Length: 430
Ligand SMILES: *Cc1c(COP(=O)(O)O)cnc(C)c1O
Image (cartoon, rainbow, N blue to C red):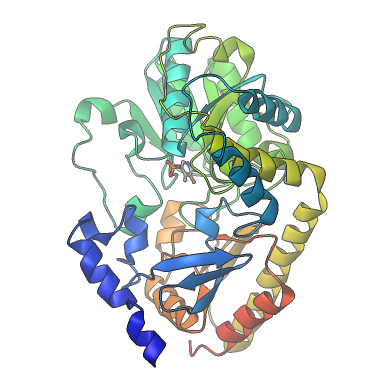
């Protein structure tokens, strides 16, 4: 009792936060706007568990929206950062660790000749698009409805993630002039893409895609879809950009490219590549990457790009993943265990649902139809998801606070964590 008095409640903190920060949060989905209720203010985390400001523990299925694939506060990752902190936090000059992590990524992913590090997935995707435009000398590009590529203007047209969660159809501030170069296709609709390409063939710089979608829930590419996009891009001389900010180093060591055997011209990374620190990157064929300044004239820069502390976290995480492929086997097993057992529970209860799972990414949609694109995801019973979310939160299981976000599994999840999660789902009155 006494201890509880010393601690601020989530409600008190949220009220206070709203006095100084728009909506009380520094990224919209954190505000719980679509699920309702009060966001939880976290104080610490270790392994698979988050601890909030009142000391309550949660089994974490967000993992900071993807980066914490090894679990929170991993001993080796933390030690590497401590070591770097004592050597100063930033120099604004080249450092050796930048070569080490660049070489490691080029070793782990066969079609990355050159890679540049930035601080957010938004920057990585924004620059990849600029580079594709500079390289091809064309303006238009295709993106898919419900895909999210960060918050740069050209991508905020029919975007996924928080834009979908908040139901914003047109983002004020994105000009007509910018939006007119963004052509929208339906995910998994190859014929639709072919049509758009034929109609715009002299103007198309790029196709950008989440090659396994994760920002409208998890939606895998249908058979032949990525291969088809690869062929179309070759045919029309158009740059294929895989946005692997979410899937890179997660669905396989070499990301979607390795898992599905389709290779893009440019690839963006983020999340796992920084091991929980603000790191992202874009890379690809030398022929294209050579157009980036200072070699070429496509300009891109960053005061804190390649920050040594951030890269210490990133390289330690990537080395652990590279040296221990059994981590991916364990993540696959955890993903299927959760999927199979949630399916049994929901079958038993007679609830209409679809679970999409690709390794350690998954999502549960309350819908009787297959979830293959934005429209089918949006046709799900969001209200039922929101009620399940709050039931699980109460029972110490932290799902993403939106039906449009993927769940992320980490290597630190124990059998006990998974079984407790299943038990909590089983106890819910659907
Ligand atoms: C998270 C995400 C981004 C944006 O990354 P930030 O670091 O939040 O700017 C871009 N693309 C995809 C696929 C993402 O999941």
